[in-house]
Image 1: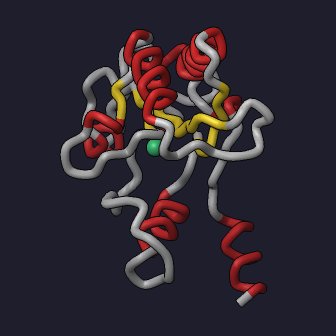
Image 2: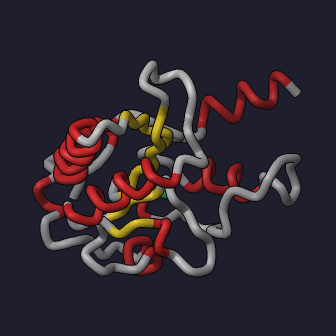
Length: 159
Ligand SMILES: [Zn+2]
C-alpha cells in the first residue's frame, strides 16, 4: 500500500504552488490573499494545478477508495489549466483550517468575486467553498477541447 502511494505521487500533478497558476491568475490570487489579510482573514492555498491522473484519484475517494466524496467532477476542470485555485481560512498561527467559520468564508468570497472570480460556494450542485476560478465563461469541456481565455497568450511557456 505504501509503495502504491509513492508511485501515485510520482506521476500525479497535485500542486499547491501559486507559481503553477497562469500568470494572470497568480497575480489575482496574490491580490485575493492580501485583500483577505487586510480584513483579518489569513488563508492558505490547498490546491492550484492538478492533472487528470490526480483528478481520477480525487474522484475515486468515497467511491472506489475510502473517505468522504470530495468531488463530482470526473474530468479535469479549470485546475488542469492553471485557471483555478482552492483556498481556506486558517487560524492566525496558520496551523488549523477553519472549515466552519462562515464569517471568514464570507470575506474570502467577497474579495474573490470582487477580483472577477467565480466562486464554488455559489454552485448549486456541489458547493465548493475553497474554489475560485476564472475561465472567461469557457466551460471545462471547452477548455479540454483546447479553447482558452483571450488573455491566455500572456502565458509565455504555454501556447
Ligand atoms: Zn477547486
